[in-house]
Amino acid sequence: MAGFAILMTFLFAGYVIREWTGVPLPANVIGMVLFTAALALRLVKLETVEKAADLLLRHLMLFFAPVVVGVVSFFPLIGREAAAFVGGLVISAVAVLLVTGWTTKALARESAAASGGYPPPEAKNAESAAENGRGGMTV
Amino acid sequence: MLPGWVSEPVFGMALTVIAYVASLRVQRRYPWLHPLFVTSGGIILLLVALRIPYEAYAVGGKVLEFFLGPATVALGVPLYRQFRRMKRSMAAILAGVTAGSATGIVIAGLSASLFGASQELVRSMMTKSVTTPIALELARELGGVPELAAVLTVLTGLFGSMFGPALLRRCGVRSDLPIGIAIGTAAHGIGTARLLRESEPQGAASSLAMALAGVITSVLAALLRNGL
Picture 1 (cartoon, chains in turn orange, purple):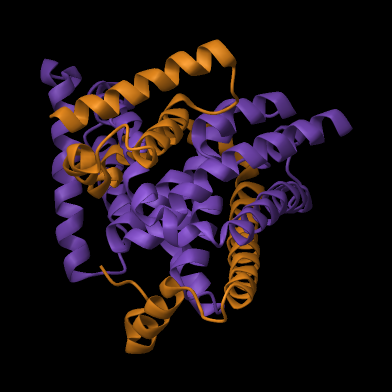
Picture 2 (cartoon, chains in turn purple, blue):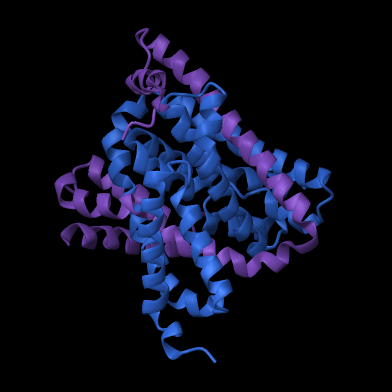
């Protein structure tokens, strides 16, 4: 429960800071940045928050479900523009995925090579998993 | 006339939790079925079949939705645990997120125009890859419709979450870092939610990309607005 209290404190701090400074980020993202910094600076001990955080994150999809259901009430808005809506959505999502993935992959290789000539450990793990036919989705 | 319990918070909460647990069972048997798709699809079908208005469901739904706040803060834990591995690739990460965010704005605008979308839809489309609160604000600033932007954002997240990892692997992106960065940039929290269940390195990269994409897209949108 202490972990949950800490998470709520940082969330609340996010709201306060957003109101004071007008940072163009949602309060929960500001809270996340502050919380990560607090962990890195050892202001918050990982063991205190780990359980609460892992529980919330394991079921993050549960909390998103009402948001997705809420989309239904806006379906009439889409109406006649359904083709543009779906087409634009799919094409741009695919473009963003591939451009981001390829750019990051190409540059991460280069920087790994420059700093010592070995692929980053995450690349090794995922690729050997992919070869096993599990597509890198090791749990 | 609807019975009173329909508009009690317990109805929406119980329905969502039951649907979610059922969807995890379904996924165990059919791994390609995305739990979020099954959960929300199931709830929508039930509401429509029983003619229960969305507003009644939302009373309980909003309670669960609240937990997105502390859960987003909690993303700091995987971020912290994985940060050392990601640190030396920071330049690649920043370049990837920036390229992806810019692509999103341009391609979303262009493709929607090609399909003959109205100005409002085009402008609501441009910022849909970032997390919902940012997307709403940016759409408003660019002259889009916030509600439309919310629908687009959520559906983009769901699409990226369902098909993103397989698409990336098929196109030669197989390691954790680029997969996480791409999903976080394209499909924000909904994409991150899936990756966290499958791989912590991917989930952490996705959380980081989601935060960075929010900032970078905000900056790009400001540039775009001043250039218009």
